[in-house]
Length: 261
Ligand SMILES: Nc1ncnc2c1ncn2[C@@H]1O[C@H](COP(=O)(O)OP(=O)(O)OP(=O)(O)O)[C@@H](O)[C@H]1O
Ligand SMILES: [Mg+2]
Image 1: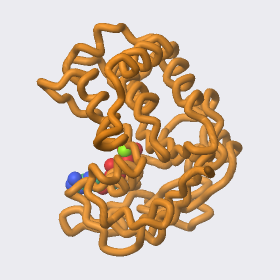
Image 2 (image 1 turned 30 degrees about the vertical axis):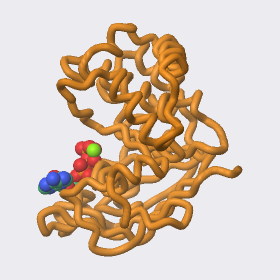
Image 3 (image 1 turned 180 degrees about the vertical axis):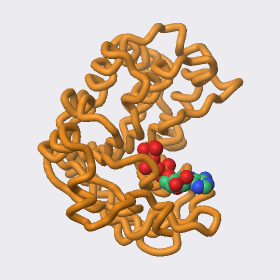
Image 4 (image 1 turned 45 degrees about the horizontal axis):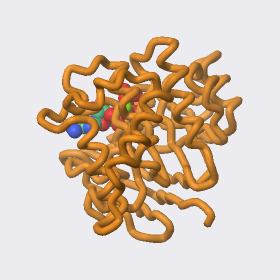
């Protein structure tokens, strides 16, 4: 079976009556790694939240489909079951639910009733991934993200990614706050996911991450739109020269959504 296709067309999104996304077009297919870069406040996280169905974000125009199915018609949990996954820029702390319980419920929700993973199999898989990501085993018995350091939270997001095996994942600044060793481990986890049934959208500010995870496509977001796309060389040029040359190309002075509402 070939991988899934997430198709975003002319997406417009408002928050509290203010338009943030102004016509995003983006297609991610199984097997492809896409990176989105772009200055602060240009709509990258808004795009991630809109895809996952965050209730504060109102879709005013455009479409999002997964294998032709209307994602905008799905509840948040249905989106997850359909194979979408978001690692948030700021992962939430969930008190009272251990990491291990959270993972098992999430896996079973995806597998569906009557097809739950056995406890033995779950523990074995979890142990393997904890080892792979060099995460202390005690972490699995702690409440999800509660008291986790910034880097531990990011590592835990990748643990969820490896455990849930989504079709399409969006990783929002998965590299922020990671020390050099953690960056390598997290990249190793993401690279392990690479196969024709897995597509990924990596939101990042730094080429550094892309030294470890080579993207097939790099996109630049400004003013709530994808304004430029290219290959890995585009990220390298941004690292070296910043964003001014793109703004010049576009003939704009301000790249944020703020000034262009
Ligand atoms: N819930 C909200 N309420 C009001 N404004 C919001 C909300 N969420 C986002 N915005 C505004 O939308 C714009 C885009 O925000 P977004 O978080 O998508 O940017 P970003 O590209 O992810 O930036 P960064 O690189 O800093 O993470 C910003 O001006 C932000 O203040
Ligand atoms: Mg952001």
